[in-house]
Amino acid sequence: MMDQAVTSELPPILRRSSRRPLCVLVLLVFCLGLGAAGVYFGASIEEVGEVAASREAVAPLALSGQDKAALSEIQSGQREVGDGIAELKLSIDAQRADLKRIADQIAALALRIDLLQKLTLSASSSSSSSSSFAPRSPAQAVANPAKRMPRSAKPQGPVSVGGVPLTSSSKTDEP
Image 1: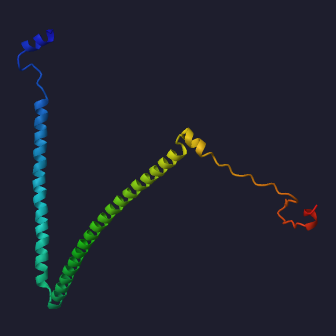
Image 2 (image 1 turned 90 degrees about the horizontal axis):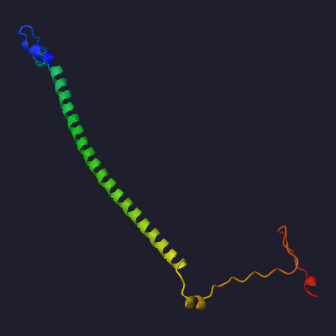
Image 3 (image 1 turned 180 degrees about the vertical axis):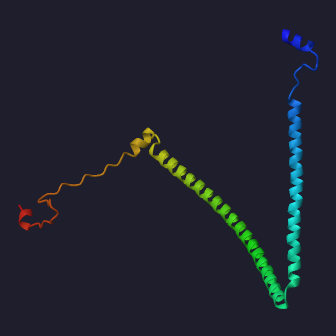
């Protein structure tokens, strides 16, 4: 509190001035300098472009008849190539559109296939689970007893162990 009272009592010349206005002034001068440099170099770049264009305009006038004919052939060839490139770009754009359309159709079909596979799997699992795990009523249990497979009869007589067929003799079969 005492410092504030002392600074307010000092005359304005002895008070320390803020540096903020000085920084703003320096920044403003710097920006103006950059703008002036941009205008100067921008104008000089345009002048260089104009000089190059004027040289190109003057150069064809100094050509001979054969050079002019060759130049016109080259320019017409360039136009034809440019037209061909434009047609190719249009063709490529059309092919890209077709490809995108086909890719969208394939994605839709793949989605349908996945959906149908899920439906068939859920339908088959629900039908098998309902038939195998369904509780049977007592009437069904008595009416439909579980069928048992008959046991295979044990062979009588000689049995081949090594896989060689045995011939049965009529003497061993008769008692």
